[in-house]
Image 1 (cartoon, one colour):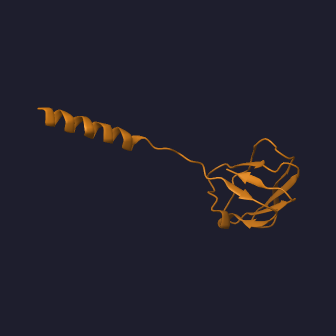
Image 2 (cartoon, rainbow, N blue to C red):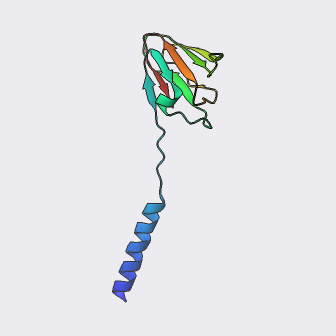
Image 3 (spheres, rainbow, N blue to C red):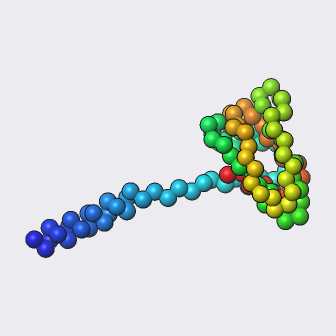
Amino acid sequence: MKKFTSVLLISLFLSFNMLIVTSVAETKVLKEGFYKATELNFSPDRVYAIQNISQNNAIFMLIFDGNQNLQQSIRLKPQSQKFSLIPIGPNYRLVIAGNGEVSIS
């Protein structure tokens, strides 16, 4: 009976640990440049947030669609708050201008 109880408790303990899933948001840190959404593995059905993480430099970010039409532009001050981006399609392009770094999550 002691073996059965100990096996039951161990199996319950292990099963509860398997049910716990930790979610980690993937954060991309980007510098000045041109980026394709396919290179960054953006999901078109997810809304991303952008934040300037540099200490002293402002950043200007532009998002263009597949027809090279401007869809969104944001000027981010140093150590800015997070701003929501539009849903980014697979053929979209991002342009980041400035000497700082941005974090997209």
